[in-house]
Image (cartoon, rainbow, N blue to C red; front, side, top):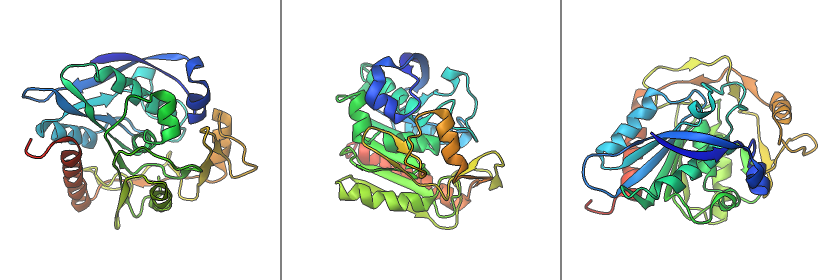
Length: 298
């Protein structure tokens, strides 16, 4: 167990404009070191709105078998939260991005870790953490020194689209399902060209005929409480204000966010695995982390 200190910013805006005044938050995370001699590359993992699941742990075990250390962010447990499905308020993307960078700053000091070879990956909510941890206005507000070497985002919420889509130089890849009605693939297909136009090293794989959480071992089912964001698109300015489609009111409080989502989001998204796509996703993740973190021949 690794302990460190983060904070509780509700929105990216609070990080970019007022980070020093955010209430502190004691944090913990689980570091696993593989067999062998270090310093080891590292993958930081961020779970989704349902918390850590079996398929998440399977990825982390796979990375350790490759000689890569892993760190499991405990953003929910550290705040005494079990799930954010259907509310997305008690633990936010902003909080988790900050948690990830504060963890990175701590882990870079560990002699067993190669601080220049640290990637981040995450699923759904954690996929958003993975993606937006590379957004420059946010990253620079947190730390201009600590950087992730690569970002592998599984079905992230791309419906928040920066008006200035300027991202770091690190490779970014999005894996998402064509039929995803929780965090829609079409939003990511819209965002990726915007990012590329600004020089981001980003690519996307859309798996045909599969839903959200296509890499689970369990079959698809409906989550009656979850938001369906298919019809949602929000612009975000350079100060991290996510703007409602109605009058461009910033969603910088829980009430405003609930109001904005009530105007576009439905309920009852489908999530669950597909065996072939699950296998393809694990294979892609293995190759991605190998190519980004392991020198040739290592």
